[in-house]
Length: 126
Image (tube, rainbow, N blue to C red; front, side, top):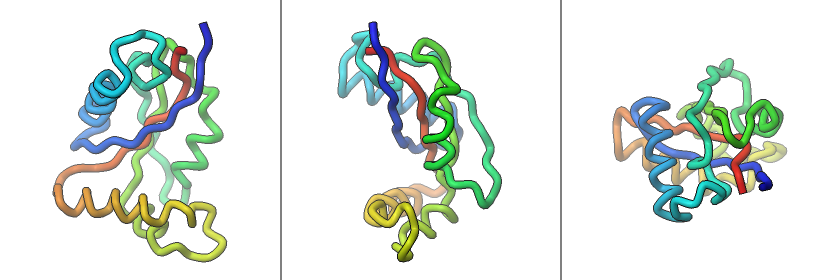
């Protein structure tokens, strides 16, 4: 069988709670097929704490291949500080097209104090 890369964002008070929500949502959206090409085909996650100046999206793009489709996936936090910077739409920012999405993520965080946003990435079985 094959594989494909995936990237998904989810909210939770911890990386584990966000991972479990993301897996449950993938089952709901794509079924329980063990080859559905989503986070649900992974076996947990490895949380990576990034430095303040590191870009979570760039990190994910550069580290997809650190993970196997039948093993864990990667996880980094999309901090409020990072999302605020993206939401400004600064010319030359590589995430300029993601302004509206960053604003949406920030609005969810504002509505639910104590939640954090996590980006999961890696390979999924297809």
